[in-house]
Length: 249
Image (cartoon, rainbow, N blue to C red):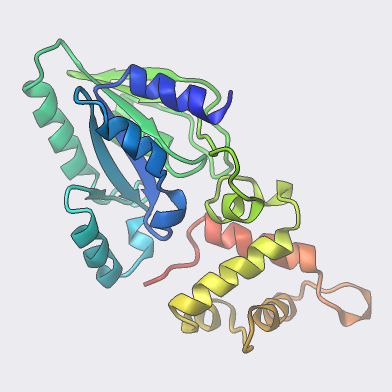
């Protein structure tokens, strides 16, 4: 199913929409069109949830809080901040005029929707995997007065291959030209804090490709002639990034 059919189905059947955003890359994983559509509807409420907040510094969190004062900051995998979100949803449900509060969750594949649902409603047992695309169809879960909809992760039409890889929306083994995605991740990290890569990989270099080569050598990812195995090195970097092994703070 395409991007907008999935999103419009969630919007149509929800009273509250949770937009999951990767705290490391808010601009890349926050869809402004979804926000506009929800805000144009007086009958629905939007809650932005920054997931993977354990992977950024306190300084970055405070900066985002100023920009998004009503947002929630969680780490679904570390079970951080979910209680505050659950309390807010339960409070809304208790003051809701209907029998239940319908909650839809939207976001990129592998951004943590199913993990979050399992914390909001432990009995849900939504299928979770580190590989994108685990949720194949829309499914509802009820807990108290909350009805929570899990939808397949969807990629906006036109998003580039590199953005998809950085957003963990695609299995690194299935990405075309993983070297480009890996070097873009390295560029991103070098601008944030060059020491991150040295601490994690012991890598050295002035440019992203020099660091890329250094990581390949440090890991022993070599082919005949002593050259690095670029594909294997790239997949390692992307995989570490997608699984949260690379922290920004």
